[in-house]
Length: 253
Length: 295
Image (cartoon, rainbow over all chains, first blue to last red; front, side):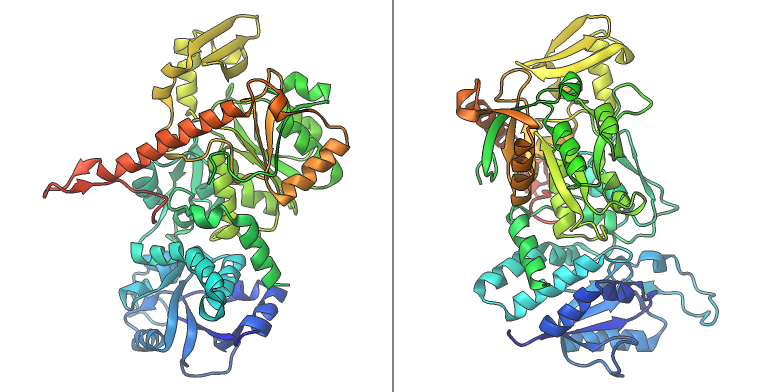
């Protein structure tokens, strides 16, 4: 077994749901920590006060611009990690914190909450609220293969992670509306229902085979957009789904 | 990759279950496989295109019995957003082993949900059987209504069966009337999303099936994955199907290959053409999104 990679979780303005999701891998988390990754920084899970050097930093929550420490910690994490991941809807797209307008007990002055890419460069997105434990696991395994694997494994990991990196390049806005702009308006929707099935707040219904987004319910987590097979689809990875699923399953046994 | 995708075997088959063949579109492959998988405990339930309040408008539903399966048998040539229920099936319905049937694009969505479970918690290892159906293109409900009511002159509620084959769209009514229209007139009604699809025979399904290539009342079956292979062998051993070798039936695999090649070639052209749909102010091409390149 090659040397483990180091992973940390930086907690900004989020609800800790993403951190809980990491733990929701149950025995899978132990397997990850036993064989592939050392958790070097995380709220409540690791007794470390200051952001250390690490391979992969998962950032949970959006960045509060009115909170100097948040901004500083985020920049520090960027400087000290090889791969910075926007972990969850808040970090990637702002999510529910997009609706903040200050006046909250007990920090009434805090009103500006932005996706972390408005402050630092982000390498990879894991959207949704919360992200799924299996997605975090897949990214962790692939990050391990990317940083410690042989050439073949590096190629697989690169192919797998590329779309999630491209999501980070695409920008920091994705909500139900983007299905309209980037999929339906572009003549790409074929009515599979994935967006409605994936929405954590049931803001999407299928009306005569096409998604209808209730904007009052949409929390801007980006799940529908990222999960849509017509937002992106990579044949080289998906056509080998059996092999890749087996490889991930094998790695977790 | 081959236009027919990766597969372990291809067979012409028909269900031996008379209850099913009476109601099924062709060979009754999907219904029979789900009935077998339910009985054997391979799946706890399946997501299928069930009936709804409007005639011939499918509604995705979770079925857990053969009776429910039979109620959903047959093809409706319009969209059923089956993926809508994929997460729900493991939650509200509490299924640990989910079966799902869908068109090639829906199989792509299933595999994406498994490999990239971004908002699909606990779904990846619960897809026990993904069955695909051949698909050239799909219609919105309103398009189907226009075809049946305006072109074929039949009321939707009086239709007993719809069928596509031999270059024609055919409508059979309860009272025995048969209306037909040439398939080429249908193309203008096709939903645009189908025009960039690069899959005809559901390459990513565990098992995929469709009438093309086999004689009337029979279906062509591609067994594609390890999982699909195990289920198919079991179903054959249980006597669920009568089969014929693919090279001994007419019109045979050549027709499937021909149609698949036609669809993929045509749609690849559409994908490429999107790159240069308009012009920017400086005269350079202004393209539309390509979902196969980047988000």
